[in-house]
Amino acid sequence: MPRNLEFKAKVKELKSIERIFADHGAAFVDDLRQTDTYFCVPKGRLKIREIAGKKSEIIFYERDENSPAAMVSNYEVLPIIDSSLKNFLTDSLGMKVIVEKERRLLKMKNARIHLDNVKGLGEFLELEVVSEGDDAGDAELIDGLKRIVEPFVIEEISASYSDLVIRNLG
Image 1 (spheres, rainbow, N blue to C red):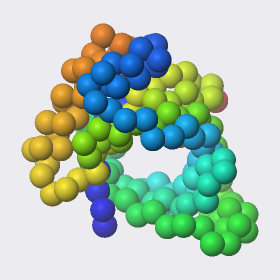
Image 2 (image 1 turned 135 degrees about the vertical axis):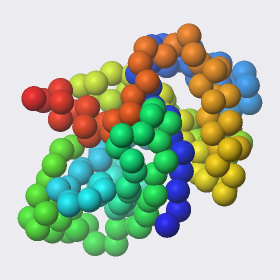
Image 3 (image 1 turned 30 degrees about the horizontal axis):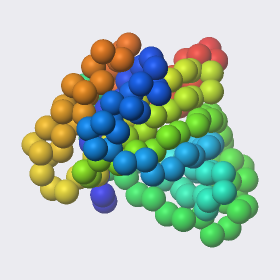
């Protein structure tokens, strides 16, 4: 199962953060409108990600929910071939929550930089390094990227957007 190291923070001034990353060599990849539908499962997280203008995918991931803000996740991603899968999973497992976001995706080395505006929650930075087997190097890259934007971080987050949306609804 592939894995990644992730850091997430509530931030201010996404445009300034993007400029700073660009000044450090990050490349713009895409603007994405994403809707993640999470389902009730006994372990891990299961979601369907719908991306405007692109193919949908189903994602399963597990991570230590009690870890510090930089989290290691094991995950699987599969393309969705049958559009009725979302209804099937909703009927069979139950829908947990829907998270809607607008994401600007940048890339720098083997890091994906997500500048997210999450509906009902605000602006977030998510750093994701797909593991290449060098945990120390991956953590070092995350730490270096965090230092670049430290003045814009309001709060480090160790929860999924789905958890934050559920807390917001409650």
